[in-house]
Amino acid sequence: MLKHSIENPERIQSALTGCLLGTALGDALGLPSEGLSYRRQHAMFPDLEHYHFIFRRGMFSDDTEHLTLVAQALIGAQGNPAVFARKLSWKLRFWLLGLPAGIGLSTLQGIIRLWLGISPLESGVFSAGNGPAMRASLLGILFLEEPDVLKHYNRISTRMTHTDPRAEFGALVLAVAAGMAARSDHVEPREFYQQIRQILPEEAHDLLLLMEQAVRNFEARKTLSEFLAGLKCENGISGYIYHTVPAVIYTWFKNQGNFRRGVSDIIRCGGDTDTTGALLGGIIGAQIGHEKLPSELLKRLWEWPRNVEWIQALGERLGQTCLLGEPQPELPLNWPGVLLRNFVFLLIVIIHGFRRFLPPYK
Image (tube, rainbow, N blue to C red; front, side):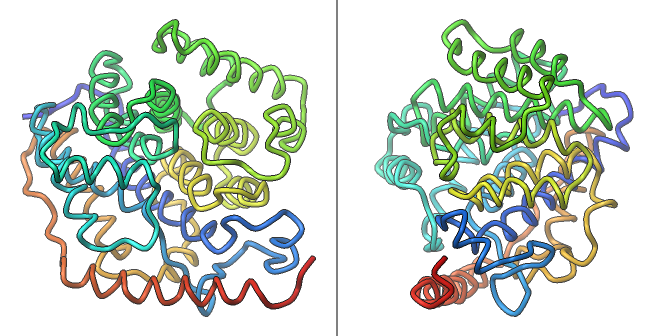
């Protein structure tokens, strides 16, 4: 049975649910802007106060779905890393059978290798994409006080799809950010940097330099655009984890506790906007708790069967299992409903693709 001695478990419970729901909202807000240039995004979506996916309603992508898979695996594992690895690997296999409309190439290859019988510890491919970061935030919230445990779970989650150490290191930084955010209304950037210095190995030297650059830029009051120019991401944040994670962390530094402004700022940066919105939304959602997330966005999230109520129940069940030590069964999910939902989602994505051929062309 898994039970942690954590100060203020009520806050951490709210953080778990806030992280899940914040990820979903950030993902859904960012999805329509994915891949658009800065100018085109501004022309098509002059404001980001509401969703732009379908009739001012939003749907989320694989970023949120992967985080819910991690939550389910943690509930089922009840503190056993080997069981966590087995459960998460099977959840990823069956997630692929649901025919998700958006999936990264490395993640696809890793899951195919799982289906071919390769061990979850060796199934990943050599890539430094964002997949592992998508699955990391809940691990940081639960295991921040136990660095060795956190690193072990993060490695399990990462190597199912990605074996490049940079993917593991980037996901670990994201996990620490979520864990520290869940415990404080304001995290000092320098304190955050000291924390990741203690937990990252020497091989993560390049990432530590980027994070030190983020802290120094923040202390010098540099704008987000100026920081991104230093990363060579002025034309959009790429899917490379050493671009994505520093950009997300810097945006968090400048917008702690402000969900709408933070997510809007990271989406305006362009590039892989559903992932950056999801990652930042998860961190700020953990910091403010689910009660303070924008109610209008929650109401207009157009999802089924993983709707807002289901995600909230998932967060509560995760807390009961991991914080209170009360074993719970995994939350049931309507898998035929997932197939139907994914078909509808794909149709809307195709419509968005054709919409981009129409004005405005700025």
